[in-house]
Amino acid sequence: MPGDTLLGMSLAHGGHLTHGHPLSISGKLYRVVSYGVTRDTERLDYDELQRVAEAEKPKPSYFSGIAIPRRPSSATPERTSGGIFWS
Image: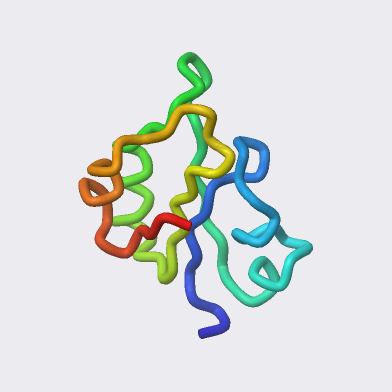
């Protein structure tokens, strides 16, 4: 529903425009929170992703491996919030 919270990867960290960028329709309709990669390893911080998902209670969430050069473990999204989906 418009106004719901959407969780997506930050564009600056490899996310997609359609996952909440302010100029896209998703960014205009939803309150967007984002996650990214750690500065030192440039890998996803799954603990931070879990913390943000639990704190913000997004619906929907997009967890995309398209822009990530290292394919995450298929078990990782299951370890995080049940509402995080591969796209």
